[in-house]
Length: 342
Image 1 (cartoon, rainbow, N blue to C red):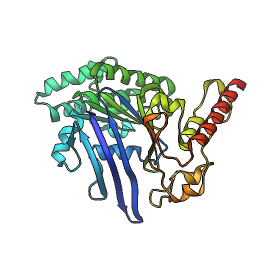
Image 2 (cartoon, helix red, strand yellow):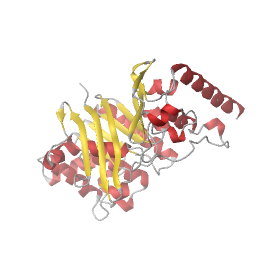
Image 3 (cartoon, helix red, strand yellow):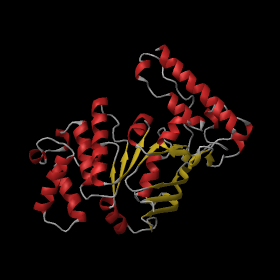
Image 4 (cartoon, helix red, strand yellow):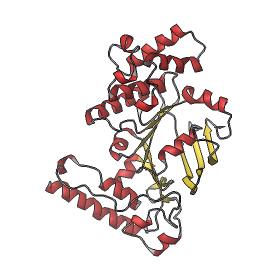
């Protein structure tokens, strides 16, 4: 059984301008001990999907449908107190910006201790011991001293380690990491990713890695879903996705990846802008930006069909198998030639 199973999840927000369809019909499973990469541009619905999973969207403005099951137990419709017990103890989350996620007027230790006291029947002294231990585990030097420091006294990379510590202090089964390496330099990014992988192996937890960076997905993920316009447009095992992506949007994401041996060259880019979720385009959400658009793309939303590579690789596209294979082979050859020339 999947640790987390999401089926036909939808999230809409009522605004003064109309209904924003942030998430539409998203389904996926997350198995124990595996890492799911969730990739797409800003506004594709990645973060809202998992804020909905965590029960963190405002019920006064959000309308949610579908199913979210944790070990078979339905989470949608749970009370606030039930969700509060699950958040932190069963599912931990690392948010995008650690500086705004941490309380600037409370010490790091106090905030970690509070996370323990909410979920465990222990004394403040025992909670402090756990706080120091988890800071050591995420490789913060002099943890027994730095536990009394404030967030502004930590670097960006160290604050991100604190956020990881806070997410892990109650030993959750699932860790959701929302852009955990954004705004960090390349060296610190690599350190954070290695740390997360080590902690996953030690704690046997499942990870959801939300990112716009396919390079991060390639390094850390076992499975991947690509989101666009609030929908899943491709999902596969990570090796299959990089070997033969089936959807033009995924081709664009792969083509825009920087390559070390092509330094100084121009990056490919996907033309246009992501769609408005207030007034989404008809048919395929990617058709206004797709160079291979056909009339049917403007009229009909393609189903999330299985690839000829296997049932676990699914995608949305009206192009037939022969056309997709021919186009991807040409793009792959062009990328290879550019790298060779560089």
